[in-house]
Image (cartoon, rainbow, N blue to C red):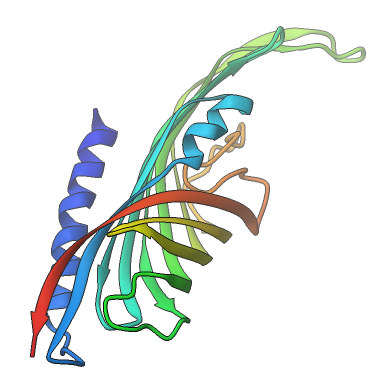
Length: 224
């Protein structure tokens, strides 16, 4: 429930932020079409097939600032739950990213194709626990225990390079390669998290990720 509330707040803030920026830009022709683009990362559903992920959903909002610059916000939730004979583990949380993207292509009037590079700041708030841990050691002996529910956070910078192509009017498909550099966060001194929502494996910095998304653009007109 808290994750849904956080995503709703992020959605409202992103829309407001994008509209404010777009409202201060100047048109570079008699009529220029900008827009608010909504995206869903469909690769998040595929991850659940071969990884111990029980639920993962991510969406994005992008608002035009100038002809080649846009403001982008991304948010999602992640739930991981798996167990073996010697342990059980669960984590869940939400994540947010906010930044800018620059289109490297020379755009024509009302051209929605993009080859872009972006810089984003990411933040995740999540929790994890291990209800059962069995330890077997030939010298110290065997034992069992558990890890209580612990709240954690993570902060990182992200460089994103991607391609987006319009398939039909206002509908686009795109992929992106992401390089994430972990900065700081609230960590568990007993056990490192298996995965950080929105970032990836905790023990990897930089962490490399790939996303594949479907986008719908809501156009609006800007007159000189």
